Length: 438
Image 1: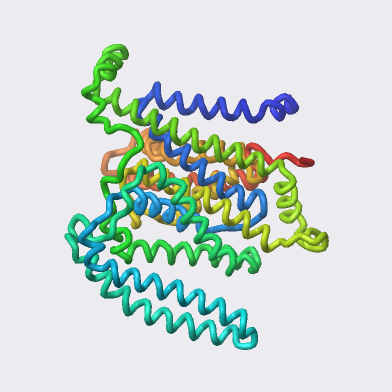
Image 2: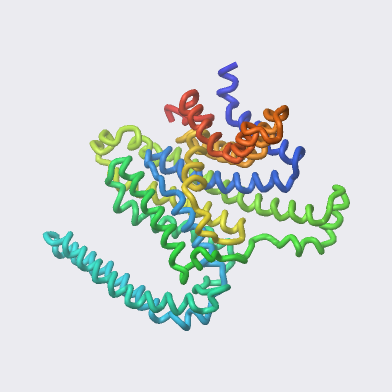
């Protein structure tokens, strides 16, 4: 029996996950089921990116939140229309600030190459001087830009391109940040790498929150373009009216289901492409080399492998995938909300998905994403129902009953911690473990 389950583990577990989703559709509503499915697909993309870093190479990245936010920023800067008045008010000074940044980097690299004996002090002096000059131009530019119709704009806007272009752009933003982080931090030990990525993630979020000229900060960017039609536009279509009549539902519900289905198809297509590429990479000579480095770094170095360079490659690749997931999430929400990025949702939860599903196995990471997101969504209503059942015989003013009902709202983090502990104790390799000997 055990051999049968091991042979059919992946189809059986995915079938069970599909049945759980169908139960929500039949038991609650199909709009809720599709909402869970869409966010599960996005979470699967992010989990896949983390698995590329951790499962392939053993890199402990705790800065997932920052790379997801950069993906969302890529959508804003790509798809939103530009604000001409803002460009007129601060565009020149902003361009000069950008030139100062480029010049500072170029000068620092030149000095580091030509003056190796003074590399450290000279670099610090150049960077400090460049920062002062950059702020001289950036501060008046940002003030002028943020003063332009600050209630609804107050930022530069984007390029006005199709929103789907923002998904790979978001991946490129995350990859660029990962390259900079990797050049600095990948030489560190794993625990120090975790601390570094966590700190840099918080810095990214702080910059996005406070630089209003770039993304409106905590004022949020709303009204992002959509790759699918709006529900209100579909409700006037005859085929939607016929569909609603056929299934004996209202037009609003039918249009909402169609829109969510279209999102699901888009997200599934992206996940399918990334999964195919990840599997090809995993089973290629490059993937075998990465796992050899992960399992025994010293032996790989002794064989002449450039471990730091390979780690940089996989760190950039995984962060790019996380950035694409962040761009997809911002598109689904229809707004960019920097204050919503928190480590619990965008770092800890993704790590639980990877660990529960099975690190080192792409199929396991995707399954873990769907399962953990399903539990995350269903924990609060099921927790409230359980507490109501347990306290049914108590008086309405009973202190214990009140305490238990109030505590139902905290079932989500409790269940995540419990699942993580149970997995680490009874299935440390996850639901779909990495295959050995491949």
